[in-house]
Image (cartoon, rainbow, N blue to C red):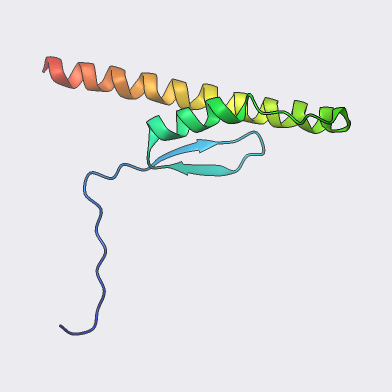
Length: 85
């Protein structure tokens, strides 16, 4: 060994989604990201003093969840088309 470190990922597909703030989010596990955002959009504080924050967070996670579902739909469609060929 010459001391170099190599990293490799097998079948790792990185997808990108822009959030409501315009930040690019990298997604490496689409199904897990969909599951997590579905959970997060349901969270809210018990204390009503956080209602405005909860509304903003719900809007953020709902938007992200919808974008991920669209990405999944496109991925599934591409998979169906490639299976036809």
